[in-house]
Image 1 (cartoon, rainbow, N blue to C red):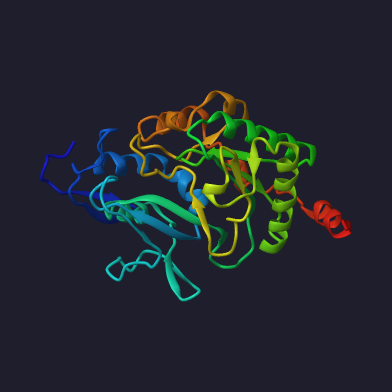
Image 2: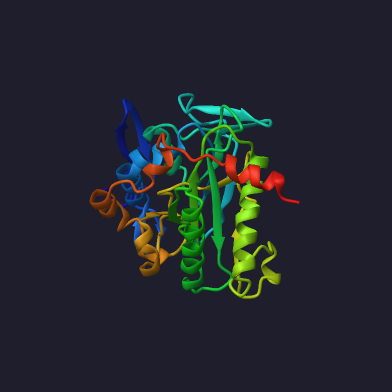
Length: 300
């Protein structure tokens, strides 16, 4: 472990990177320093990068830890090394999170949250159909219940699904789809499925975006997936006092877990034991939405 004041130099993929202030506490309650954080990222880099590669990256930076000022960063900084890949989209030059050296350089800038686009930088084709389950109360039980109801519906439609914690209070469901649909089409399908669930369980679920109008109901967000918009990457940390991580789950785990179970301290060992549970999202076997879209066209 580095001493209090000493910077340290690490060799990453043939590049030398200096970690400044490695002892700085970023998550003080969880006892996570900058160096702890960078070691965590190096341990999860393979599955993390497998999903973030070639996607538009937005980070949230906390220069003095999670309890101080923070800001969103979309544009790649002018002082960033020229070897960091980038892509221009709608007049913004986004960094691409394509290698471990980029991850470590960004982490040294105190990027504590990693949010990536629903499409690759090269085009605007959605790679998945995604639902973000956002609770209105601190209880996790409504989130788990809604996720399982959605899973039941997806199973009936023979749509494969992968679930992960948001790293905050919710869950996020990903359905890998064939890369030939538009965001307009995936939004039609998302609206149809979300509306069905709301009609089935109006006591539990809502499509109301405004928090003040939701009451205690859980918001099922199908609108976030869109060109240029982002969602937390799998294995990204969150700026929560527990140093939580957005973590892929087995479906059978959903009724028994809480998002705070998955942290910088616990996820690397879990990854060794269970492997990358998000891998099916990147598989070659991707679902067709044709039958649902055909049904929606016929629907009056």
